[in-house]
Image (cartoon, rainbow, N blue to C red; front, side, top):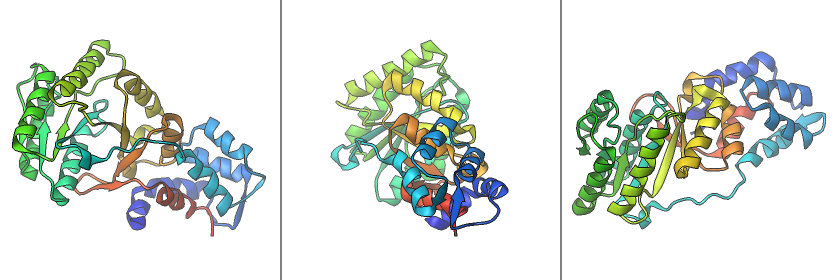
Length: 289
């Protein structure tokens, strides 16, 4: 896992090396500030870190500061309590929703679970086609309709089909709604309501996909989606293509909700569980001896 993380955060590590080319046992608070800024950690959060540290910082002190942003209560959802376990995948266009759905489906397959996809992004024909291609590639069934049709109908039909066929996991795509588009936001609320009609308490998990290359700016997107329908967890994508790996700290601190997975590439197997301690240590390995 550590080797995978080191690869994923390769550009972030390179950015850190530019401001901290030599590893040390201790660094100054100014050096720590420069490193975190370079990795795209929110400035206010950096100030919070520094307020609790002296001018001379060792690895243990830095670890305790960074890991603190992940110390919050979160209601982790137990998948085994629901069959089917229904997930709705949320996020703006380009964040990597469709690819992430394929990765989740592949992960469940490897765990011996059956999967059904729902092509709930009826806003774009390309989205339906892309998800259908992934379904064929993974040999996973999919419920879909034509562009422009009611996405809530897809939600209902997908869950109903999964119940009748005793499917383990349902993963439903949604349109890449911009948070400024009120009508699409209302449509998303309707999809959640219809899911609950098809199966009480569904969707069991609403997962927000955040593009890691957007850095801390993705936080505002997350807040709006959370206000609309309530987000249960986060998956961060494209971290392998950015030097903004420190934004994970800002995201966790601002949103106070679990980061379930991070994307590590473009292939179906390129998804790993997020572990805060391994993430923090990957960052600190580039700073301290």
